[in-house]
Each structure stands twice: as C-alpha cells, then as structure tokens.
Image (cartoon, rainbow, N blue to C red; front, side):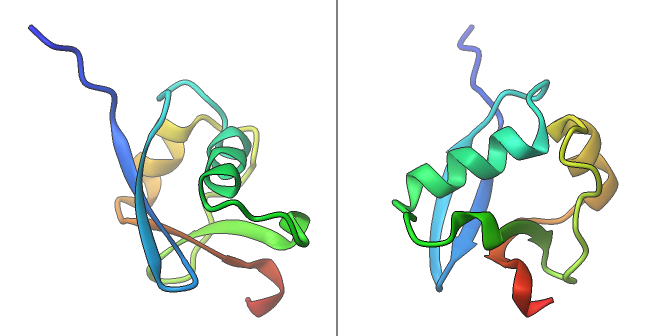
Length: 83
C-alpha cells in the first residue's frame, strides 16, 4: 500500500500549484512551503493563506489539519494587504 501525502492547491497570481504537506505541520510552515514553491522573493511577509471566501485559517501556529478541517475549502495565497 502506498502512503500518499495529502496535498492542497495554492493559487498565487492566477497560477495553481498542488503542494504536499505534513498534516501536523503549522499553517506558517505551509505558507513558507508555498512561498518557496512559487519562488516569491519580494515581500513574502505580506502573504497569508485564505480560502476562496477570503477567510484565513487563524493562528499560524495551528496545525494544517486543524485549519483545513475548519475551512473545508481550497486555500489560496494572496497578499495580506489586499484583505
């Protein structure tokens, strides 16, 4: 049996990437993973994760599993200053 890691779709500037994640990792770790995957080097501190309704997952120290379960929607990364 193959153990597949869970994945989430991240959208940044209209580009979609499916990223695997550790369910016990923090939301901040997932955001950092997305920033690296998209090669974002300018102002990464302005980015945050949101679902399609524009709702953030809450504390960046919460686990990805807990946050995804609460949001129950695809997460996308958009600049935090556009909230």
